[in-house]
Image (cartoon, rainbow, N blue to C red; front, side, top):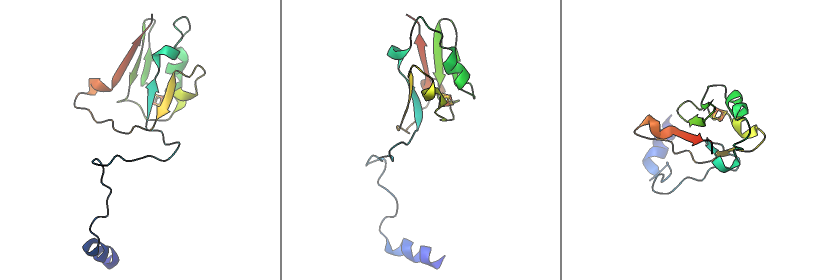
Length: 109
Ligand code: SF4
């Protein structure tokens, strides 16, 4: 305990300079899924993506696919569905003022 106290008194800074200096994540770090609409086959079923998503962050209807990052647990299972329409990206900055800004909708056609 005293060691930490001494370190706090003698160190000028023990935290990083984020957000002034961007943080780099380790290789393979998965922060969130990103959907790539150009990789979604408009003629195929998009249901496998919804079935892979256990918390229901991916919803599929006949007309559209919805990704709600507010429900996502960043498990990465959607990125393992054949077709590659989802990838896991290291961008961890998800703060928004409106939760609707966490929703991505892809429409067929
Ligand atoms: S990372 Fe997991 S929880 Fe998030 S959208 Fe993909 S399957 Fe769903």
